[in-house]
Length: 146
Image 1 (cartoon, rainbow, N blue to C red):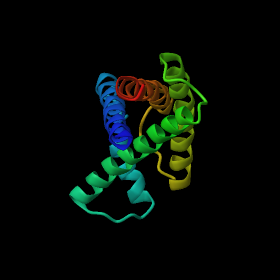
Image 2: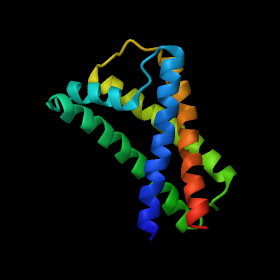
Image 3: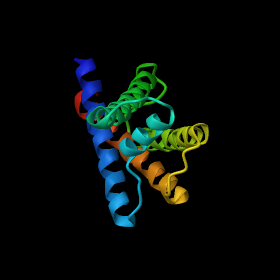
């Protein structure tokens, strides 16, 4: 049962985060779409996939990372390092927001891929997107695991 809840939380939280990023991308007319940026990065790292496979891979990697972060939140809860609360979710979201920004900085630097985006704006929206992600995880865990 808990595996199903973890998978549901990963889907819901990643979808909420992605929707926020897509809304910010449209609002600011910038490329803030993580699955699309992941596709470009895969090309730079010579993962030669064509057309729809490249698109699918970007989404699979994005949701896979989401699953990883949901598992981390779950493990921290199971080890009694935090309760399932709004505050713990907010703190977790801030922490993974910083980790996410660091990950993107590293990936952009390693790939020598410099998309024409407002990096400051991208990283700022990414920080808040991770807080939204953590809140999505919290909602599912609170409703179904607590």
